[in-house]
Amino acid sequence: MKKNGEQGTWRFFFALAVGWGIFRVAAKKLAKVFVGSTGVPGSPVPVHTVNVETPVAVVLPPKPTGRAADQVIGREGSSNPLNHQQWGTLIVMSAFAVSLAGGAGFLFAYWSEGNNLLLGATMALFLGGAGVGLVLWEHRLMRHTQAIESREKLPSNEEEREALREDFRASEHEVQRRSLLGWMIAGVAGILAAGTLSLLRSLGRPPGPSLYTTVWGRGQRLMTIEGQPVSVNALQPGSSMTVFPENGIGAEDAQTVLIRVNQQSLQLPEGRSNWAPLGYVAYSRVCTHAGCPVGLFEAQTDLLLCPCHQSTFDVLRGAQPTSGPAARPLPQLPLYADSDGNLRAGGGFSEPPGPGFWGMP
Image (cartoon, rainbow, N blue to C red; front, side):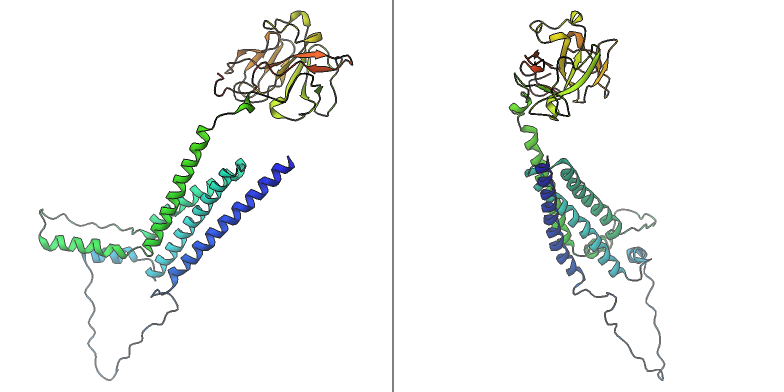
Protein backbone atom coordinates (compact mmCIF):
# COMPACT_ATOMS: atom_id res chain seq x y z
CA MET A 1 0.00 0.00 0.00
CA LYS A 2 2.87 2.34 0.78
CA LYS A 3 4.41 1.74 -2.63
CA ASN A 4 1.13 2.58 -4.37
CA GLY A 5 0.83 5.77 -2.32
CA GLU A 6 4.35 6.84 -3.27
CA GLN A 7 3.60 6.20 -6.96
CA GLY A 8 0.38 8.22 -6.72
CA THR A 9 2.27 11.13 -5.08
CA TRP A 10 4.99 11.02 -7.74
CA ARG A 11 2.42 11.05 -10.52
CA PHE A 12 0.58 13.97 -8.93
CA PHE A 13 3.70 16.14 -8.68
CA PHE A 14 4.84 15.17 -12.19
CA ALA A 15 1.46 16.13 -13.62
CA LEU A 16 1.61 19.37 -11.62
CA ALA A 17 5.05 20.14 -13.08
CA VAL A 18 3.81 19.48 -16.63
CA GLY A 19 0.83 21.77 -16.06
CA TRP A 20 3.06 24.49 -14.61
CA GLY A 21 5.35 24.31 -17.64
CA ILE A 22 2.42 24.71 -20.03
CA PHE A 23 1.10 27.62 -17.97
CA ARG A 24 4.50 29.39 -18.10
CA VAL A 25 4.67 29.05 -21.88
CA ALA A 26 1.15 30.43 -22.17
CA ALA A 27 2.03 33.28 -19.80
CA LYS A 28 4.90 34.35 -22.04
CA LYS A 29 2.50 34.49 -24.96
CA LEU A 30 0.03 36.46 -22.87
CA ALA A 31 2.69 39.03 -22.02
CA LYS A 32 2.83 39.99 -25.71
CA VAL A 33 -0.73 41.26 -25.43
CA PHE A 34 0.61 44.36 -23.72
CA VAL A 35 3.66 44.85 -25.93
CA GLY A 36 3.45 47.49 -28.63
CA SER A 37 -0.17 48.52 -27.81
CA THR A 38 -1.32 52.12 -27.88
CA GLY A 39 -3.64 53.76 -25.47
CA VAL A 40 -2.30 51.84 -22.45
CA PRO A 41 -2.08 53.87 -19.24
CA GLY A 42 1.40 55.37 -18.96
CA SER A 43 1.92 55.97 -22.70
CA PRO A 44 2.79 59.53 -23.75
CA VAL A 45 -0.14 61.73 -24.66
CA PRO A 46 0.35 64.23 -27.51
CA VAL A 47 0.14 67.87 -26.38
CA HIS A 48 -1.42 70.56 -28.61
CA THR A 49 -0.62 74.19 -28.07
CA VAL A 50 -2.99 77.01 -28.91
CA ASN A 51 -2.17 80.69 -29.33
CA VAL A 52 -4.52 82.32 -26.84
CA GLU A 53 -4.05 85.76 -28.42
CA THR A 54 -5.66 84.60 -31.67
CA PRO A 55 -9.36 83.81 -31.52
CA VAL A 56 -10.01 80.23 -32.46
CA ALA A 57 -13.33 78.96 -33.70
CA VAL A 58 -14.19 75.71 -31.90
CA VAL A 59 -16.01 73.27 -34.15
CA LEU A 60 -17.62 70.33 -32.33
CA PRO A 61 -17.72 67.00 -34.15
CA PRO A 62 -21.15 65.90 -35.28
CA LYS A 63 -23.01 63.67 -32.88
CA PRO A 64 -22.76 60.06 -34.06
CA THR A 65 -25.90 58.38 -35.28
CA GLY A 66 -26.91 54.88 -36.38
CA ARG A 67 -24.32 52.14 -35.92
CA ALA A 68 -21.66 54.68 -34.94
CA ALA A 69 -23.82 55.70 -31.98
CA ASP A 70 -24.22 52.01 -31.06
CA GLN A 71 -20.45 51.62 -30.94
CA VAL A 72 -20.13 54.58 -28.60
CA ILE A 73 -22.89 53.16 -26.37
CA GLY A 74 -21.09 49.82 -26.30
CA ARG A 75 -17.96 51.48 -24.93
CA GLU A 76 -19.69 53.56 -22.29
CA GLY A 77 -18.81 52.75 -18.71
CA SER A 78 -15.11 52.24 -19.48
CA SER A 79 -12.69 55.18 -19.35
CA ASN A 80 -10.19 53.22 -21.41
CA PRO A 81 -11.82 50.73 -23.79
CA LEU A 82 -8.49 49.44 -25.09
CA ASN A 83 -7.27 48.63 -21.59
CA HIS A 84 -10.58 46.89 -20.87
CA GLN A 85 -10.10 44.75 -23.97
CA GLN A 86 -6.55 43.83 -22.98
CA TRP A 87 -7.50 42.75 -19.48
CA GLY A 88 -10.42 40.75 -20.81
CA THR A 89 -8.12 39.01 -23.28
CA LEU A 90 -5.60 38.26 -20.53
CA ILE A 91 -8.26 36.73 -18.26
CA VAL A 92 -9.72 34.59 -21.07
CA MET A 93 -6.29 33.33 -22.13
CA SER A 94 -5.41 32.51 -18.52
CA ALA A 95 -8.55 30.37 -18.25
CA PHE A 96 -7.67 28.52 -21.45
CA ALA A 97 -4.09 28.03 -20.19
CA VAL A 98 -5.42 26.40 -17.01
CA SER A 99 -7.65 24.20 -19.18
CA LEU A 100 -4.71 23.11 -21.35
CA ALA A 101 -2.60 22.31 -18.29
CA GLY A 102 -5.42 20.29 -16.72
CA GLY A 103 -6.03 18.38 -19.96
CA ALA A 104 -2.34 17.52 -20.31
CA GLY A 105 -2.27 16.36 -16.70
CA PHE A 106 -5.37 14.19 -17.26
CA LEU A 107 -3.84 12.46 -20.29
CA PHE A 108 -0.61 11.79 -18.39
CA ALA A 109 -2.43 10.48 -15.31
CA TYR A 110 -4.69 8.26 -17.43
CA TRP A 111 -1.93 6.67 -19.52
CA SER A 112 0.35 6.23 -16.48
CA GLU A 113 -2.44 4.45 -14.52
CA GLY A 114 -2.86 7.33 -12.04
CA ASN A 115 -5.33 7.17 -9.17
CA ASN A 116 -8.94 8.31 -9.48
CA LEU A 117 -8.37 11.43 -7.36
CA LEU A 118 -5.73 12.73 -9.76
CA LEU A 119 -7.89 11.88 -12.79
CA GLY A 120 -10.86 13.71 -11.32
CA ALA A 121 -8.83 16.78 -10.31
CA THR A 122 -7.17 17.20 -13.71
CA MET A 123 -10.46 16.61 -15.54
CA ALA A 124 -12.11 19.28 -13.37
CA LEU A 125 -9.33 21.76 -14.25
CA PHE A 126 -9.66 20.97 -17.95
CA LEU A 127 -13.43 21.27 -18.21
CA GLY A 128 -13.68 24.11 -15.68
CA GLY A 129 -10.98 26.18 -17.38
CA ALA A 130 -12.56 25.70 -20.81
CA GLY A 131 -16.03 26.60 -19.50
CA VAL A 132 -14.79 29.69 -17.65
CA GLY A 133 -12.82 30.82 -20.70
CA LEU A 134 -15.83 30.59 -23.00
CA VAL A 135 -18.13 32.37 -20.54
CA LEU A 136 -15.62 35.16 -19.93
CA TRP A 137 -15.07 35.54 -23.68
CA GLU A 138 -18.75 36.28 -24.08
CA HIS A 139 -18.87 38.67 -21.11
CA ARG A 140 -15.54 40.46 -21.51
CA LEU A 141 -14.79 40.48 -25.24
CA MET A 142 -18.14 40.52 -27.00
CA ARG A 143 -20.12 43.73 -27.42
CA HIS A 144 -23.30 44.07 -25.37
CA THR A 145 -25.51 46.70 -26.94
CA GLN A 146 -29.16 47.17 -27.64
CA ALA A 147 -30.19 49.33 -30.57
CA ILE A 148 -33.78 50.14 -31.45
CA GLU A 149 -34.73 51.77 -34.71
CA SER A 150 -37.73 51.84 -36.96
CA ARG A 151 -37.83 49.31 -39.75
CA GLU A 152 -37.42 50.75 -43.19
CA LYS A 153 -39.10 49.61 -46.33
CA LEU A 154 -37.48 46.79 -48.24
CA PRO A 155 -35.61 46.28 -50.50
CA SER A 156 -32.62 48.35 -49.34
CA ASN A 157 -30.62 50.43 -51.75
CA GLU A 158 -26.97 50.01 -52.64
CA GLU A 159 -25.80 52.64 -50.16
CA GLU A 160 -27.43 50.81 -47.24
CA ARG A 161 -25.96 47.50 -48.31
CA GLU A 162 -22.52 49.07 -48.50
CA ALA A 163 -23.00 50.55 -45.03
CA LEU A 164 -23.88 47.10 -43.70
CA ARG A 165 -20.74 45.65 -45.24
CA GLU A 166 -18.70 48.41 -43.61
CA ASP A 167 -20.22 47.56 -40.24
CA PHE A 168 -19.21 43.92 -40.60
CA ARG A 169 -15.69 44.87 -41.64
CA ALA A 170 -15.41 47.22 -38.67
CA SER A 171 -16.31 44.44 -36.22
CA GLU A 172 -13.26 42.40 -37.28
CA HIS A 173 -11.04 44.47 -34.99
CA GLU A 174 -13.14 44.28 -31.84
CA VAL A 175 -11.34 41.28 -30.30
CA GLN A 176 -7.57 41.60 -29.86
CA ARG A 177 -5.17 38.71 -30.32
CA ARG A 178 -7.85 36.82 -32.22
CA SER A 179 -5.38 34.38 -33.79
CA LEU A 180 -3.75 33.47 -30.46
CA LEU A 181 -7.15 32.95 -28.84
CA GLY A 182 -8.14 30.78 -31.78
CA TRP A 183 -5.02 28.62 -31.37
CA MET A 184 -5.73 28.19 -27.67
CA ILE A 185 -9.30 27.09 -28.38
CA ALA A 186 -7.94 24.65 -30.97
CA GLY A 187 -5.57 23.27 -28.33
CA VAL A 188 -8.41 22.79 -25.85
CA ALA A 189 -10.50 21.06 -28.52
CA GLY A 190 -7.55 18.84 -29.46
CA ILE A 191 -7.01 17.72 -25.86
CA LEU A 192 -10.75 17.09 -25.50
CA ALA A 193 -10.63 14.86 -28.58
CA ALA A 194 -7.52 13.06 -27.29
CA GLY A 195 -9.15 12.50 -23.90
CA THR A 196 -12.30 11.13 -25.51
CA LEU A 197 -10.31 8.72 -27.66
CA SER A 198 -8.25 7.69 -24.64
CA LEU A 199 -11.38 6.80 -22.69
CA LEU A 200 -12.42 4.47 -25.51
CA ARG A 201 -9.42 2.36 -24.47
CA SER A 202 -11.10 1.62 -21.15
CA LEU A 203 -14.36 0.60 -22.85
CA GLY A 204 -12.60 -2.03 -24.91
CA ARG A 205 -10.27 -3.44 -22.26
CA PRO A 206 -11.12 -7.09 -21.38
CA PRO A 207 -11.60 -7.91 -17.70
CA GLY A 208 -8.71 -10.37 -17.59
CA PRO A 209 -8.36 -13.43 -15.35
CA SER A 210 -8.15 -11.38 -12.13
CA LEU A 211 -11.96 -11.19 -11.90
CA TYR A 212 -12.26 -14.97 -11.90
CA THR A 213 -9.73 -15.77 -9.17
CA THR A 214 -9.04 -14.72 -5.57
CA VAL A 215 -6.27 -15.41 -3.10
CA TRP A 216 -8.37 -18.18 -1.52
CA GLY A 217 -7.03 -21.65 -2.23
CA ARG A 218 -7.24 -25.10 -0.74
CA GLY A 219 -5.45 -25.36 2.59
CA GLN A 220 -5.55 -21.63 3.41
CA ARG A 221 -6.27 -21.07 7.11
CA LEU A 222 -9.11 -18.72 8.01
CA MET A 223 -7.65 -15.68 9.81
CA THR A 224 -9.17 -12.78 11.71
CA ILE A 225 -8.37 -9.19 10.74
CA GLU A 226 -5.87 -9.24 13.64
CA GLY A 227 -4.03 -12.19 12.06
CA GLN A 228 -5.22 -14.93 14.43
CA PRO A 229 -6.30 -18.36 13.11
CA VAL A 230 -9.96 -19.30 13.51
CA SER A 231 -10.64 -22.51 15.43
CA VAL A 232 -13.76 -24.66 15.38
CA ASN A 233 -14.69 -23.19 18.76
CA ALA A 234 -14.47 -19.54 17.68
CA LEU A 235 -18.23 -19.03 17.23
CA GLN A 236 -21.44 -20.07 18.87
CA PRO A 237 -24.51 -20.93 16.74
CA GLY A 238 -26.20 -17.74 15.56
CA SER A 239 -23.02 -15.61 15.50
CA SER A 240 -20.72 -14.42 12.72
CA MET A 241 -17.33 -12.81 12.02
CA THR A 242 -15.24 -11.57 9.10
CA VAL A 243 -12.27 -13.71 8.02
CA PHE A 244 -9.46 -13.56 5.44
CA PRO A 245 -6.94 -16.03 3.98
CA GLU A 246 -3.64 -16.15 5.85
CA ASN A 247 -1.67 -14.63 2.96
CA GLY A 248 -4.30 -12.00 2.06
CA ILE A 249 -5.46 -10.32 5.27
CA GLY A 250 -7.32 -7.14 4.32
CA ALA A 251 -7.76 -8.05 0.63
CA GLU A 252 -11.07 -6.62 -0.60
CA ASP A 253 -11.93 -9.46 -2.98
CA ALA A 254 -11.11 -12.09 -0.34
CA GLN A 255 -13.17 -10.74 2.58
CA THR A 256 -15.52 -13.45 3.79
CA VAL A 257 -18.27 -13.64 6.38
CA LEU A 258 -18.09 -16.77 8.54
CA ILE A 259 -21.38 -17.84 10.18
CA ARG A 260 -22.23 -20.73 12.46
CA VAL A 261 -25.76 -22.08 12.17
CA ASN A 262 -27.64 -25.23 13.19
CA GLN A 263 -26.12 -27.93 10.98
CA GLN A 264 -29.42 -29.83 10.74
CA SER A 265 -31.13 -26.75 9.24
CA LEU A 266 -28.75 -26.40 6.30
CA GLN A 267 -30.18 -26.95 2.80
CA LEU A 268 -27.12 -26.25 0.67
CA PRO A 269 -27.11 -26.83 -3.12
CA GLU A 270 -26.18 -30.23 -4.46
CA GLY A 271 -22.52 -31.09 -4.10
CA ARG A 272 -21.91 -28.84 -1.07
CA SER A 273 -22.91 -31.15 1.73
CA ASN A 274 -19.34 -31.32 3.08
CA TRP A 275 -18.66 -27.55 2.77
CA ALA A 276 -20.01 -26.65 6.24
CA PRO A 277 -18.26 -28.60 9.03
CA LEU A 278 -19.96 -28.26 12.43
CA GLY A 279 -22.47 -25.82 10.93
CA TYR A 280 -19.84 -23.28 9.74
CA VAL A 281 -20.69 -21.64 6.41
CA ALA A 282 -18.62 -18.95 4.67
CA TYR A 283 -19.76 -16.53 1.96
CA SER A 284 -18.13 -13.64 0.13
CA ARG A 285 -18.88 -10.27 1.74
CA VAL A 286 -18.90 -8.52 -1.66
CA CYS A 287 -22.52 -8.06 -2.76
CA THR A 288 -23.38 -9.43 -6.20
CA HIS A 289 -25.45 -6.33 -6.97
CA ALA A 290 -23.11 -3.34 -6.62
CA GLY A 291 -20.14 -4.61 -4.62
CA CYS A 292 -21.15 -3.26 -1.20
CA PRO A 293 -19.97 -5.16 1.92
CA VAL A 294 -22.58 -7.65 3.13
CA GLY A 295 -22.03 -8.00 6.86
CA LEU A 296 -25.35 -7.75 8.70
CA PHE A 297 -26.47 -11.19 9.91
CA GLU A 298 -29.99 -11.67 11.30
CA ALA A 299 -29.73 -14.73 13.53
CA GLN A 300 -33.48 -15.21 13.97
CA THR A 301 -34.19 -15.42 10.23
CA ASP A 302 -30.74 -16.71 9.10
CA LEU A 303 -30.47 -13.91 6.54
CA LEU A 304 -27.55 -11.78 5.42
CA LEU A 305 -28.45 -8.15 4.68
CA CYS A 306 -26.67 -5.71 2.36
CA PRO A 307 -27.03 -2.22 3.90
CA CYS A 308 -26.61 -0.36 0.61
CA HIS A 309 -29.66 -1.48 -1.39
CA GLN A 310 -31.37 -3.86 1.05
CA SER A 311 -30.64 -7.14 -0.74
CA THR A 312 -31.09 -10.19 1.52
CA PHE A 313 -29.51 -13.65 1.18
CA ASP A 314 -30.62 -16.95 2.73
CA VAL A 315 -27.65 -18.35 4.67
CA LEU A 316 -29.15 -21.84 5.00
CA ARG A 317 -29.73 -22.23 1.24
CA GLY A 318 -26.39 -21.21 -0.23
CA ALA A 319 -26.95 -17.44 0.17
CA GLN A 320 -29.70 -17.38 -2.46
CA PRO A 321 -31.16 -13.84 -2.80
CA THR A 322 -34.61 -13.51 -1.26
CA SER A 323 -35.31 -9.80 -1.84
CA GLY A 324 -33.69 -6.68 -3.21
CA PRO A 325 -31.92 -6.00 -6.51
CA ALA A 326 -29.23 -8.71 -6.23
CA ALA A 327 -29.76 -11.37 -8.90
CA ARG A 328 -27.06 -13.92 -7.95
CA PRO A 329 -26.28 -15.71 -4.68
CA LEU A 330 -23.18 -14.84 -2.73
CA PRO A 331 -20.24 -17.10 -3.68
CA GLN A 332 -19.66 -19.78 -1.04
CA LEU A 333 -16.26 -20.86 0.31
CA PRO A 334 -15.84 -24.59 1.06
CA LEU A 335 -14.47 -25.31 4.55
CA TYR A 336 -12.91 -28.18 6.51
CA ALA A 337 -11.31 -28.56 9.94
CA ASP A 338 -7.68 -29.68 10.21
CA SER A 339 -6.13 -31.91 12.85
CA ASP A 340 -5.30 -28.88 15.04
CA GLY A 341 -8.93 -27.80 15.18
CA ASN A 342 -8.49 -24.80 12.84
CA LEU A 343 -10.81 -23.99 9.94
CA ARG A 344 -9.28 -24.06 6.47
CA ALA A 345 -10.54 -23.37 2.95
CA GLY A 346 -11.34 -26.40 0.84
CA GLY A 347 -10.76 -24.37 -2.35
CA GLY A 348 -11.76 -21.08 -3.92
CA PHE A 349 -15.20 -19.47 -4.03
CA SER A 350 -17.97 -21.29 -5.87
CA GLU A 351 -17.93 -18.47 -8.48
CA PRO A 352 -16.18 -15.11 -8.96
CA PRO A 353 -17.08 -12.67 -6.16
CA GLY A 354 -18.59 -9.25 -6.73
CA PRO A 355 -21.06 -7.73 -9.22
CA GLY A 356 -21.67 -9.07 -12.69
CA PHE A 357 -19.28 -8.41 -15.59
CA TRP A 358 -18.53 -9.93 -19.01
CA GLY A 359 -19.92 -13.44 -18.95
CA MET A 360 -21.52 -12.99 -15.52
CA PRO A 361 -25.16 -11.91 -15.06
